[in-house]
Amino acid sequence: MITDKPLLGFGLDGFASHFMWYQSKFLSAHPNSPFLLLADNITNPFNEFLYIGISYGTIGLICTIIFFTLMWQQISLIKCKQKKILSALYLILMCWCMFSYPLHVPFVWIIILLITITILSRLHHKSLIVISHTVIITSIIVILSSIYSVRFRAEWGVVQAHSLFGHEDTAILDFKRLYKHLSKDGRFLYNYGAELHIAERYEESKNILNECASLLNDYNLHMIMGDDYMQICKSDSAILHYSIASNMVPNRLLPLYQIMNIYSNQGDSINAKKIALIILNKRVKIRSNVTDFIIRKAIEVQSDDTTIREEQYI
Image (tube, rainbow, N blue to C red; front, side, top):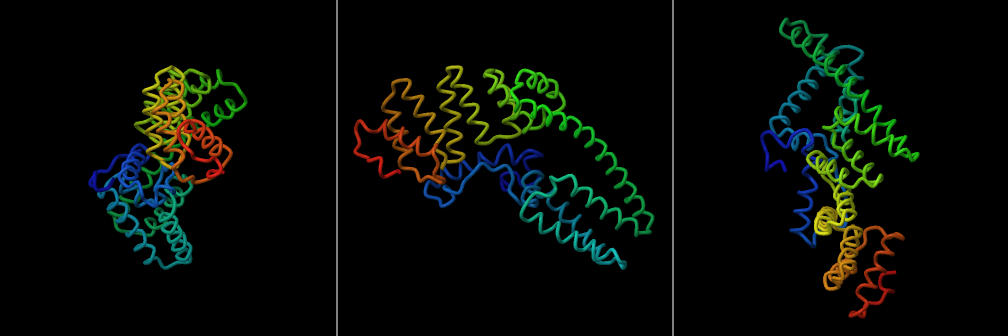
């Protein structure tokens, strides 16, 4: 991904909207890859520097590295009791950035802001004082805008809670109201589309999920879209989305099972048997009642002209 857009990257939601396509492409080109069984639905690389490089390119990554390098340089020059605390916070943050996504946590930004203000407050050069004031004012503006956004996210949380208690109609009205404020949030759109699907409003669901795909494009999205198209009797589109989901996470059996069912319901036994054979030849990542059920159904579809024994898969 970085080599495809090295300078400016894919943008704020670039990883969530593109990575699973890249994973699908890689695993399709490497059918014997040891990663095939490990592959899952990924929305973050669990490394902030990789995330920044993918989202904002090498320009964004270089700026980030320069910022953290200058921060460490200034911490090392401080001669006060807070030096050990600041050094510890900085090192913890760097370790955290290597294995997770701390910059997605609001509290971490408050800590970074406090460290930055502490460093800048000790500088006395006029130009640095101007910079420090600029940083503080910018930070206040960002915090205020975040508070505005948090209000609608808090309402979204309440709506989700209501939907869990079976108030789908009320929840959908609230989702529709919040849409104008959170329409650029892929997770909100996914949640909205899923709620419409549960309420059996399949046309509306697929429209919202199509919009979501430019911000959050993953296995779960295509599974629900496949279900939407299947419910409105558009089998070809349903097969397309189930196939995309299967390519994104090849070790999952459910999308193949849905495709097999569509072909069986259409009376297309040839393609149904082809999909059943693919299911039976797959290594199962995690055995469960669901996977065992799917394997049994695949055996039933194949039983007409194969001698595969069910005992092999149980």
